[in-house]
Length: 185
Length: 353
Image (tube, rainbow over all chains, first blue to last red; front, side, top):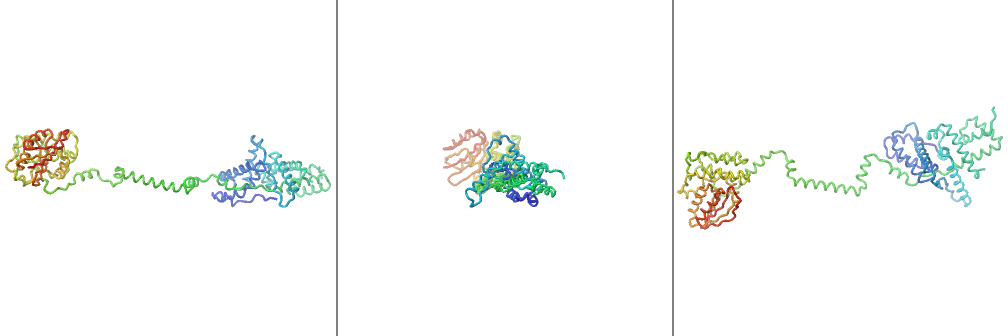
């Protein structure tokens, strides 16, 4: 289980005073998470980096408008998710081939050839299954099962009712189960 | 208790995975799974699917991502300005220092070559004072070469009858007018009493020459020639018996501010003349007379024992007459006549044996 969003009130306070080190700290803390969301949503590392960078730059510009009651992480995920969904909605994006390695897992050291092969196949299947999900379900399962956000956080990030989040998450998991039948007991 | 369908139970799977079921829901699910093999199998596969997802290695942003974000971040205006001005500093800082030195050097050079700027930079001083001071600065007087105005010389000239001199003061007045800006207080204070018409004439000549020297307008130069001429015609006949006195004593026609006038006259003589005569004393007397008759004047006199050098000034329109008279006195050799001269002709005449 991955850790949820940290309470970064102190970091937020420093950001609001224009502390340059605070912004660097923010990027360092959230770079992998935002990049991960974008990568699983878009399937391309180059596009994922572009989206992640744009997320931080927009956050930097909009720090003054950030509402203190929301968590910094939630806010950043919201920006990144919106950017990803907008990108996916663009017609030009629909014909691009996804990055084959987006969800690939590195095999453990010392694993035998058969296990390595099986692991690669499983990761490819996972990647394909996630990529095949409808976008509104994909973003929910990514935020929940890959990023570890709570239901309430996902509802806040996506601006959705809690029940819609639950419903979409459940449908996404059922879709994935159907696609991964071969790897299941 | 209402009947629970398999579909109802399977709707709880997600919440069960996330440990989000209430105690009742959890009890109901567990009871159903214990009795329904199909739902139990589905639950295992569902739980395994989520497990596979969560086991996925977290993605990592590429190396250098943070630096790229920080570089792309818009900076505060003062940081952008400093960066544009100074970075890369090993190049820009020396260039900017060189530019400052260059501009400073140019500014100093322009200042040094612009008298207007220097004038403006000085503490305020009336320009008229500066001009007057420089013009009134007395020239060094070479000993013995100048004939200073002496108030009590043996009177060498006769005062013309009042009737023949209808306006005795007019030459002085004319001269003063000609003088223009040069009529300063010191000059006026040194002016002679108007009783001696010849002295007045001298003063008029003095001022005329001085005015000429200061390059007055051509109109004023033209005017300057006429009055002395007219006055000289009315002049009494010269005193022929006091030549020796004239040689030993300063001539009465000597000029106020004569140092400057003499210097300027010598420096700017129109004619250098050499006259070889048998008797220098007699010749000098004759020269003085003919110059006076022509409305001219003796400006200065020098005698070095072998030659007598006379600085003379005659009206331009009488110069030809004077020249002819000089030729009658002896062998005359001339150099440097400025033909276009219409005002005074200044002559340096060297009398030799």
